[in-house]
Amino acid sequence: MKLGELLTVLNNNAALPQEGLNREVFDIAHDSRKVRPGSLFVAVRGFHSDGHQFIPQAVQNGAAAIVAEKGHYETAFRETPLIMVDDTRRALALLAAAFYGYPSRRLTLVGITGTNGKTTTTYLIKSIIEAARRKAGLIGTIDYRVGDKVYTAPNTTPESLDIQRLLAEMVGLGAEYCVMEVSSHALALGRTIGCEFAVAGFTNLTQDHLDFHENMESYFRVKLLLFAGLSPRSSAVINFDDARATEIISATRAKVMTTGLSERADIHPSGSIGHGVHGLSFSASTPSGTISVESSLVGRHNIYNILSAIGIGWALGFAADDIARGISTMKAVPGRMEKVDEGQPFCVVADYAHTEDALVRLLEAVREISAGKVITVFGCGGDRDRTKRPKMGAAAVNGSDIVIVTSDNPRTEDPLSIIGEIEKGMEERGVRVPVYDLASATVPGKTPYCVIPDRHEAVAAAIKLAEKGDIVVLAGKGHEDYQIIGDRKLHFDDREIAREEIRKRRRT
Image 1 (cartoon, rainbow, N blue to C red):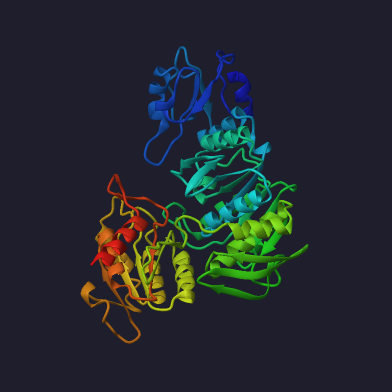
Image 2: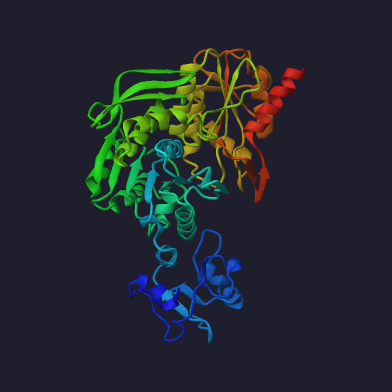
């Protein structure tokens, strides 16, 4: 593509060079190390580094042209055109969409946003699409799926350039749909600019990411961007039971479909709901009739996720039989109440719950199916929202019989400092005891807990404590197979550790 042709998408907001517009652009890069002859390099200011610092390296590597932000770079190059824009993140998104031929227009794009439930909902929708014998890609927290290819997901929603590349790859492989988790970070940073959503779903809004967003109102306003940007031809599927639902409905031009437990919602359960260790069963009332739901997913929170998936399936025009079949065939999501089964007489589940609301919902779901004690292992991530730490501590002692507080991804923070902040929320309903007293400690009205900073040791201690009928909950990391300590990313998987410790216990 000619540079001049590509730059037309910037809508005259760029200072264009006088020469070089006939140059061929062979790809786009925002990482100078990936620049090759013919690349268009876009200098993006990130959290840890500023792409403007690497413009000379991009020029040296043969960049066809450079896009930089006004006021952040002044040096001109004799042979390399320099295009100045107001916002390089926005420019990157617009350029990427144009370069890859607007792939979101060539498939049906579904976006899911909300604090909790995004991943499970996307998996359910993908399963519904496939039950209708259609091809779908997926972009989300766990991984990016394009045909038979699975890519590691460094971010829930990748950078705009990567989104457009993935969508184009899906189109090339014959995908008709893509289901995407849309994070608040992605919306705030303009990563989804250039994406044209056919359907957008809202799961819920609870506290998270306040290390990034100024406050809950700011967090919500960013989420709202997805729905405010929908066209009248699109559909918005909204959890009507959430307190912010009315504001979202008022802000969107899209056709609205509501879901929820309330009968006021367009899609809601009709009659009784069966739930237990083996899953959920209920009838869902929709504008076009009733859908019988049978799912192996467990817990009240998954009723909401299923209803959202039904609403989106309905908005996409799928038949009731395909929706029902898609829900029933989706057996599990990695790291979402994922069972670790080595034949032991107690249950072990690993879950990604890393917010107060998610932990409350998880423990409520576990309590519903537990025949014994609920033993919870959890921690909070470092360099992230500190205000949720005591709230998660309170959620843990309120919903468990025994709690072991440990490390999550401490990053650059002192693990003991993080744990200390968690403990502030445990003072009212919890009592700290030594690990060897956990099994026998009884203080009326209090939940015993201990602190084991090493997460491997914490998981091992929980496995040793568990008795027949108990459920061990490993919360916070779910599908993650790493732990970030300092600036090191080390292999660590709660599920692997649990299996190892169960086998060890069975050998003794």
